[in-house]
Picture (cartoon, rainbow, N blue to C red):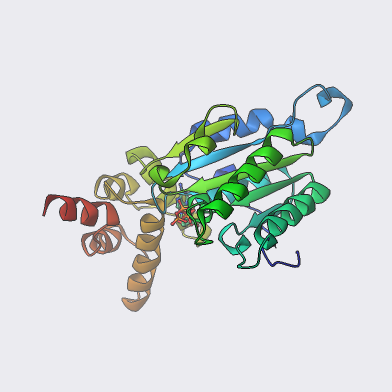
Length: 262
Ligand code: ATP
């Protein structure tokens, strides 16, 4: 969308129903939605600044960031923070300024900053620049009058500058964790439905019980692989086929645990 190639327009129609779990975030967003409708009845509502989603890989942070635009019914812009950096003096700050100005002009919109920690971990090689980028971004966020709703996502809380997580910067910080039994069942159902598998006769409770420690992305992968296996066997999808895929998969959380114990 801009000269520096740091701002991208994305199109996504996903809604709450496409996300398993993340109930606190969903409730919070549902309550804030009227602020983006901008009618006389909502004119007294402050425009929310944005949220920070921190947590485990593959558990739906990017999905939630994208679905936020669908939920609020506004366009989605993705800001590539790491791509802001430029070796020429002043160019990085200028890229940021231009990106934020464009977002302001396009408001109401969601501005999604993926892996914000990477963009703030000195990608410019020069800490001074990183610090200036952070200060400019925080100043913009604090003064923001436009209806730009920022969704920043991060995997690694320890890599985030303390200024960013301090109270009053974002409206809320949500932690995204591995799904529990019930949410795993929902995620499996979402991905079966997406592939037009009615799921009749499939024991999702048993599959959810066998997938402790699996992320949402890994559960989706189980569904995808099981459908290939069923197709190869000329069979409909069954619980044993799904369980066979589960047995053949070692989720990242288990691999990490084994590494820590080794
Ligand atoms: P990363 O840090 O690796 O980007 P992430 O937390 O942003 O991880 P996503 O990219 O959103 O995770 O997850 C990848 C895919 O896994 C999603 O597009 C979606 O299809 C599936 N998925 C993950 N979590 C969920 C969930 N909670 N509900 C439904 N699908 C999910």
